[in-house]
Image 1: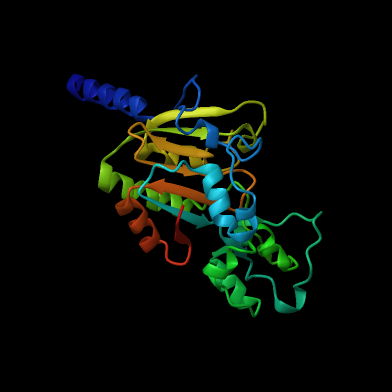
Image 2: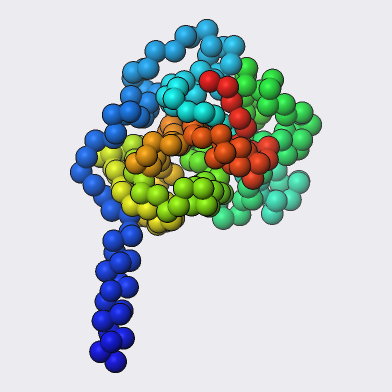
Length: 252
């Protein structure tokens, strides 16, 4: 019985070591200038914002030192429980119960609207792209600063398989927290990133995720309805493959 008690204590201590912990430090220098598009700390040719907005925002949020890059589109959401005869233009004062909504890809949403979604053409209109539709009471448009948990889950799985259970840092801009008072940085293992998804003090998904070895980074700016990823080609290729028509490769 004593041995079992000691084993339990060791397991408990090891679990505590693996938990995501808040740390008092600054974002690592190599990614800090790209932490938010507000403030324009990175200079990017403004003409690119019209020609290819995805690449414009990619350059604002990810440094040019990776093999490969991708953009993850935050999902639309549809409430299929509302009868067709009750669907109407949304009154923005009414609250929509999120648990009644199902995740839907951009292409599927456009198909519902009688439109064709083409990623190659869409990037030229992306700044107001999804706003071309009037939002109805059975729809939720892509969340700004809210990367899909499905995309993050696949990132965790792929990173663990390729690199092992890496030590990572996770940054939340203050606007991604519930109280909007202070930025937060957590440190832990990639396998424990799940812990932050249900943290009651956080209202969005992480603003930045990066490992100590700098082999990849994910940036979810709170002003954008899509997230950017930089990393080794094998990581990006598998993310795109696993998230077909949701995560797309980009040229820098």
